[in-house]
Length: 545
View 1 (cartoon, rainbow, N blue to C red):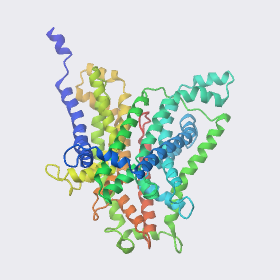
View 2: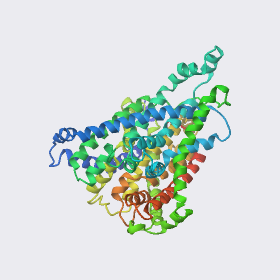
View 3: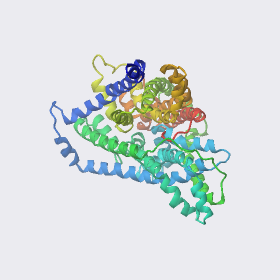
View 4: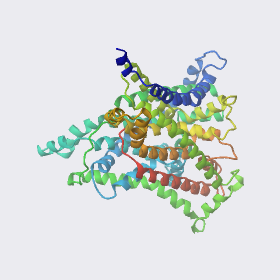
């Protein structure tokens, strides 16, 4: 009996690894996310240390609050519908059909999603400048759809790629039209992935900050931009806290929806087929949509080369200076160096913690309580995506100001804030690959005498090496373009490139706008180079955004 008990005992090394695997990410989120957010919210709902919910009634009695809440939810819902309608034909073409150049088109469709939000805002502002759409709600909608259609393409496309085509083929043999096959067979099977993609797009659009701030200003604000204005211009922390709590409730509800409809990552990958005549409508639609996605970027590049004397590189040469009326403290190239350095630091933090968390989440404990706890842990890792970056940034300033976490003057503060934003994307890229590993591989290695650490090295880490490199690229691109929290935390003498671009836009006249466009092109070019590398390393996964 003693031998049997010993046989099922969990090795101490596994216990230690599990404790560290959960403890490190939880501690990171607790100190650098939960604490600052709670402190920021507490300033509003408990200003004297006593709970006072009267602020909710006061804030929601304001007509402006109701208008902004309706605008936020309305634009997010409309953008989600448009992204689904536009993304479905593109997903069909890029994930079900085989043709030359498909990998390149996948990368081009992904490009808008990874562009910094400030760059997207500047691109549409440049494209629509002087037209009736400049500074309108339509401009914001176009930018949101441009930014998020890739989410639908990647999420639905990966699921579509794994559908068994035999049901559709049988229906065609029996005389069903392509439209009927799609509506009665394909669409119902894609339902969970479409719902998940729409929920994610809704989440991203409801919490959009940089795009809305650049294109809409205060006239077409959202909850996110209103929190920014209340915090920075009016110092109304109570109202900002109420809106932060409201936003958090919406985010948690959406994450619950995403978790319920996400589905399994175990799938059968179908072989892509050559296009048929019946694919002509989808091919035409996908071609037009892909071409439309390129227009804002091309307009940005064209405008960056335009000068008063024709075309040239004058705007780029000006980046060595500080702009008209000394708009900047340091030249733009210095800001780019700051952004690259900070993005590398943020990537190291996000990938390290994300990999540790993914290894823990990929396990399937026997205890129902442990499984539920891992589910809560998984959901908590996604929260930084939906909580206002302004709330996090201001929360840093009011919490990390005394030992042992006096980091307000520390250069590591901005990388930590950017790592919070990148962490969920790292987990979503790595975790599905780890979950797809056949458990029998680990069991076989253990039976052959491999220690738990060697099993981890030779099985898990060897399989996930390329996805980790891809996740590093995603994290780097996200950190490079992060604007919300960084705008709060960056110092004038050490700004990042997105902060500099927004600064130049806010001081028009002279050479500032041309410099802002040129700087946006530089930032976009660096991001594109990183994502091009990611696409070479990418391993398709259902769960990745």
